[in-house]
Amino acid sequence: MKRNDLVKTLIIMLSTVIATVGLALLLNLHTGPIIEANKAGAENEALNAVMPGATGFEEITSTLTIDPSTGVTNVYKEKGGNGYVFKATKDGFSKPVNVVVGVNTSGVITGITVEIGEGDFGVNDMIPTFIGQDSTLANVVLQSGATISSTAVKNAVEAGLLILTDNGLVQAGVKSDAQILEELISTVFSSFKKSDETLAVSGNITSASRLANDAGFVYLMTKGESTYLAICNNFNVCKVFTYTTDEATGDVSLVDVTSENEDLATEAKA
Image 1 (cartoon, rainbow, N blue to C red):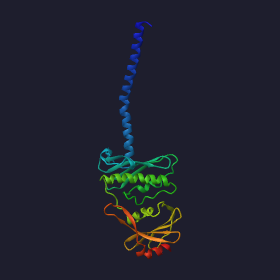
Image 2: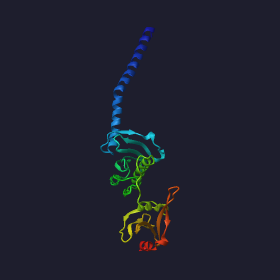
Image 3: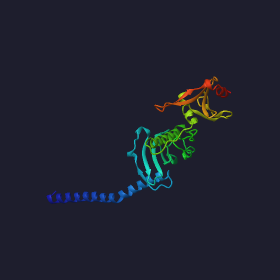
Image 4: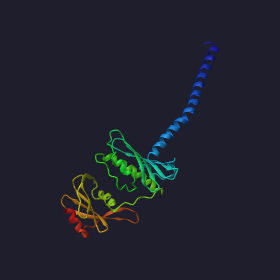
């Protein structure tokens, strides 16, 4: 190939490369903002879905103290002062469960969306029970037949609410004595799990459940202004508990008060 022909070939190749790069840059300048706008629109749509009437959102994740192990990935502040939205993830049945949750300034859940993996059991019946709940999640019940998935959803929501309260953004809800006692059952039965069966109640018994492992029964009972937990095994041995809170650490634990409440133990046995 002659020198002139080689130079011409190199010039043509270089021109082609320059033109291609230039065209790519121009295309990116044109489509880049559109792509970003679409991403921002999808993001705002997801946030608006859990906080009706929102005027916009500002991400504040980097300003907060968040332990990565909590699964909380993003926290947003609603620009109109209506509250906050957080995103959190926990391991589900087949893949991580992702939640987006809106919380108003009173610490009450305004909306929630849940994404679960294919093959996971549905949690649709459970989701509406989160609306109107504070950080105690007192009236949220795990969905029958979807224990793993619904537990992951509840844990993700609890993690996000804890981040909001620990960072002083909203006030924590106050758990009832009954809720605290029920949460402490696992300290007596490490593998505690209530069955789906709800038992009839009467007298001082306000709720009764059979243990899923068929090891006995658990009762919430009241006497006067106080609430107690009664646990009975299959040998008809019943113990009655209240709880105490360590003032130094804040740790809560059960206290056996059977001897002072033999009447409750006898009623539970019956």
